[in-house]
Length: 86
Image (tube, rainbow, N blue to C red; front, side):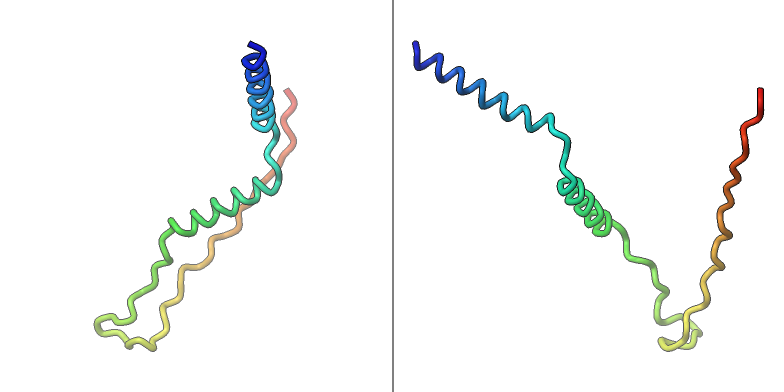
């Protein structure tokens, strides 16, 4: 009977110690590792950039420069105004 009580007490103490680690906030190194793993996965899942084919019918061949890309988008303008009095 005494051995059973000791086993139960030790088992409850062990499970309480394990549950304390679940309530702790994640460490910065854990968050950084997760962020790096997410970025690595994102890079693996993304498609490579599309490049034009090297040979086009009637084109200049492989050494011809690619046509210029579209012009850059205009900058975004954010206006912050005072709220109107009510």
